[in-house]
Image (cartoon, rainbow, N blue to C red; front, side, top):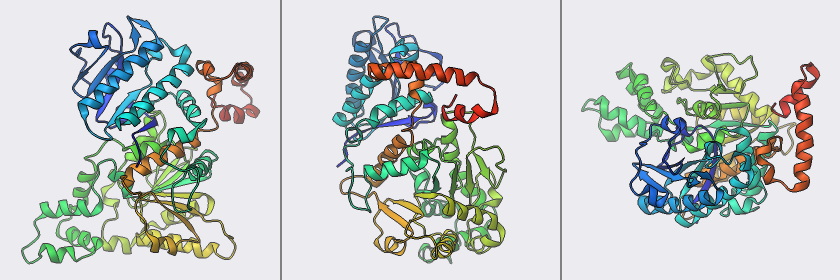
Length: 486
């Protein structure tokens, strides 16, 4: 059984859903503006002066100083005691606790970021495992996120103890996480997101969504719940649409109730893939991608053209911002090829030119299946033995796995004693770790004390060269500047 886990998120803390949040302050209980913007209760907790931490609502405040002076020992001591209190107060297994990178920035320990972050990771992972908490360590600083991932890459089995390095080809392993993460880093991976990803964020699945709308629609007495339930989901939607032209709007209203991306969305966004597709209507993945840097916005196809090199997302069944375009009913599915043929062609190009990672989808959609079958038949004479995708499935599906054994690697994350959705989230955290393995954090001197003495000397020389490269304006230097993220 998996223990509590320490997740790393490259995101804005405002976009992270949590049961509790731990925020930094000092001995005078001075609260920075960035924390006030989160809308948390900023009143001083009782016994704060005595304990160096305290709670107001769902927010725990921790003194990261020693009498107002920056001090790493005090930070670690106060944080450990604070997390003990969080666990005792919540008294809930696997409660989610959001934490920014404490002690740096306003905490005064920015110049010691490397060693401080190492100690911070250590106290957080111990608390996660001991108290069975899921701790979400969050930062929008790209170099800081890279440095945190660097610290985990040195010993993945310590940070992911519930996963074997290798194993059966149908189970998630650290070796598979490394393969998928490396593909993402090299630009060889694309994503296909199904409804299961958004269920983790709090959205209803399709069956539940239709049931809610049926309850509000009040079908005539001649149509019993039993007879309605005997219809396929597509035919249920067809009947509801014919009875009420506002059915699509009702679906949109349900989808719009959730505005925060789920943990899986944030972890998938950290893979930084250039091309992705989804049959979901919501905009949660788009929100997750822009969370770390609000200047980044996915090009959402077919509602805009992607001509500027941005990563793009293909909405195959419509979008909440365009309710008239949503594919819901039997007749809409039947007419899909005629109306959305370019979308199908673009999805097939993903299959032909990249490794497709399928998450939260069981591959039962007839239109998606038709497109995949066409690519399979097209490739069969010449493609050899390389599969063109990996499916991360919540539950074992031996028949479907056998059906696609020559084209898709079917991985079940179901394991005894664990919630499959959570196993998937932890596995995606491991994939994201490897997606950031080509780190440029050595260009940032804040993390020098994460390096050996010889490595620091080399890092300093590299930074001097990088500084010269950054000043170059000629075309010949632009590729190197991009690789160094200057």
